[in-house]
Amino acid sequence: MVYNFFLRRWLFLFVLFLPITAFAQFGPAPDFPGGPTDGCFSFVIGDVAYIGGGLGSSHMFSFNRTTKEWKDLGVMPGNIQRIWAFAFSYNGKGYIGGGALGGASNVTDQFFEYDPASNTWIPKAPFGGGNRDGCFAFVLGNKAYVGTGFDGANVVADVWEYDFATDNWSSVGNYPGGPRIFPSSFVLNGKGYVVGGAVGSVNESVQLYEFDPTSKEWTQRASYAGTARQAGIAFELNGLAYYGAGMAGYTQTFRDFYTYNATQDRWTKSADQFPDEYTAWTVAFSFGDKAYGGLGAAFINGSLDFSDKLYAYPPDPVSPQVAIDPQNLSLGSVEIGKTKSSSFIIRSVSDAPLQVNSIELDDVATAAGFSLGSIPTLPHTIAPLGSLEVMISFSPQASGAVAGEVIIGTDDPANPEASVSLSGQGTEQVLPGVVLSTSSLNFEDVLLSALKVLSFTISPENSAGLEVQSIEFADPQQASEAGFSMTTVPSIPATLAQGESVEVQVTFLPVAAGDALASIYIALNAPADKTVSLQGKGVDPSSSVEEGSSRNNPLAIQIIGENPVRDLLRFSHHSPASGYLDIQVLDLSGRELQSQSMQVVYGGEEEFALDVSQLPSGTYLLKVGTEGKSSSLLFTKQQ
Image 1 (cartoon, rainbow, N blue to C red):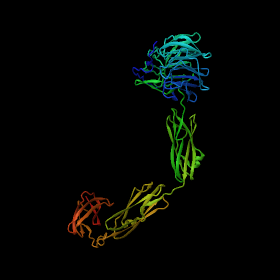
Image 2 (image 1 turned 120 degrees about the horizontal axis):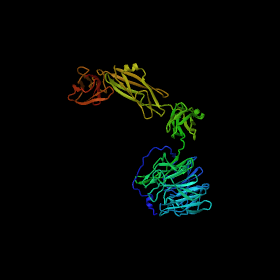
Image 3 (image 1 turned 90 degrees about the vertical axis):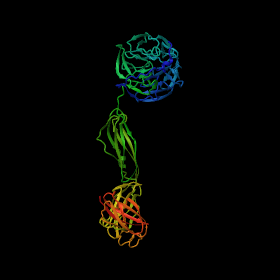
Image 4 (image 1 turned 60 degrees about the horizontal axis):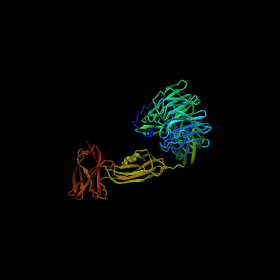
């Protein structure tokens, strides 16, 4: 039969996606390390499976069912991609043959024996039927049987027997179902079985035939009860054969499975499905009580997509598994007398709950100054894929590097006692230092009922953390009677880092003529508290001079009419010459609210009216100045 090669792989008419339902009995296994592929061969020796070849690969890998570990065994003979080869094992050796080398059209008859003890390959007699891929193969007794498949030009039906003892191939006739490509095979009760495959490129079959190695006869058995398919997987498990997955028409893949009972010659639909749609040219192998399947291809949006996933059937029991993050926890440098805290996470990284039985510091960690934060009552159960945060504090008792461990006891069978390595550095205590922008404020002369605002700042000298605990007048009554008041930004108490500061604004509003003195006391966590001295002088505008003016105070101002005022502030002033007066209205913090310039025409006594209707009710400062001289007074605004 002439076979259209291109339909083997590259012709896709349309894509049909089957409904994906939850699977009950396939469980995850470690991913194939060779990357996504399909068309691999496999065989089993003892507790180790061997998987090799496939699309884009010339390597073979081993999978240990006990340790669940993969190992790259290097390249196969020829160091070339080999897809759709046949394979089997016998007497502790593996055998692979045929396949397409490099590309789908380069089909070969090569046949090799693999020795796992030495990881070496030995050439054997080429396959008796010539070039071959996509065929079936099974071992019965001391003979292997290989048949059907593609010979590079046609799909064929011949069947051959291989004698391990003589390294000879012998023809045993033809497969009764006729030419067949990508069938599946299995062994039950000393008989070989071949099922499915395609009679050409897309004409899939449901036929099942049984082969008797004694008589060399084929007997047709109950046809497969599912949809006809090719490139499926078959394996024997606990006395039953499983057949399913595969594809049809190069457009759709299948996930369903049926079991076959040879004694009853009956197929039964399994409730279990393959976990994903990558089921064309999938690899499968069985250890007798557990099977594995995976890799393979799917038709995605008109193109082939490949998988590196492997699944176990039935799934391995899920065991608790712990992970610690981080496993090394450094608390860094901490001053003696101070405490620093951090945390680590205990994670459940499997689908089983994790029981935490104990969380303890070793004696070294305890002596070094490490301590555990609050933890739940133990034993404590962490939900699957959940976590528990554990706080660790470090209060060094002496300077120098220290270390220790936290020991975590869990029910993880592979890691029942996990640990976290702790480290830290105790350093000598650094006392906070303080920098004052000034140690005294001199307000000089201030007219009675006027005010003046000065400020100073408090800043940390180092990184020790300066705490400004309180700022207050040393003698509050004295300061109040003298006319001093203050505000701070930010509010106190405050803890300052380097680059931060507290600004203290001091207002002097003299209430009597004469010298005024006070001091501010600043309580700190530094070795010594600080004080700032205050001095100023209240000046009576009617009898004193300001800023070098005459005793008659040529800039003296006086409110005309009632005080409080409403919309107009009427005031008089005395100026020695013509020019301009700068007039400002300030709030009691010194912030300018209004300003304007008024012309003095003749000098001497003049009157002005200032619109203050937009000001809210309150007390304000009127300031009048010219040529570097100024006077000010308070007024009250009412609505």
